[in-house]
Amino acid sequence: MQQLVPLKPTHLSGGTLNLALMDLERCKTNKVTSAQIIEDGTTSDHHLVYIDLVLTSEIKQREVLKMRTFRDYSKVDIESLLEDLRACKLADPEFLELDADEAVKVFNEILTEILDKYCPLQQRSFKKRYMPWMDEELRQLRRRRRWMERKWRKSGRTKDHEMFKHLQYKFTKLEAEKRAAYTKSILKKSANCPKSLHVQISRLPGKAGSSLPASVNSQRLADEFSDFFLSKVTNIQDKIEKKVKKMED
Image: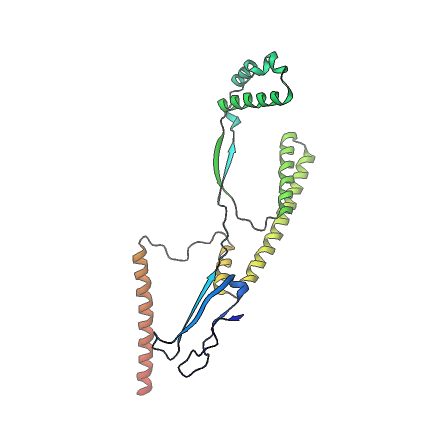
């Protein structure tokens, strides 16, 4: 903690009575550009303390949308595709006389042109799940599980299916453990901040929604809040006045 108020009188009777404490590590501040005591401009017996800070905030940018490029091979006319492959330049004797680099270049250009004709490239956006507990160990295990799933669906063997189920169980169990550990660490960090703790707890069942009541008109909602709190204050004042009258009687 650091005291930011200069060691000057901050009261009409003298003495530095005002405090401005800041945790430099938690606030991520770079520097204090100015800190001064202004004697005029206030009706209080305390002087005005003016502190100018340069603060930096760390905002995590969550990658919500990602683009995926793919080809839809399910709608390809196989017969027409085979006819174009037979009629392309790859069947010419001149293609066999090319060197390796030129042959690879021509091969890729011709096949890309044919594929673009029957199944052109498409782009699709999708939401990326926010999973900060997903580390490299879980990613590798997920790759192995997906690879084994593809192998099982292609072969249809019982042994491959059992191996896939084993990897699936292992991944699910490990992910649950890492997710629980991450949640515990987040709740522990928010233990001293009730507001942050409430937000984190509200996110546990799923996506945290708005805490405000549903309303189409924001101005009307603000007026309803105002009327509600005014009525609360009025009721409290009435109760206090009644108790005071009873005590006087």
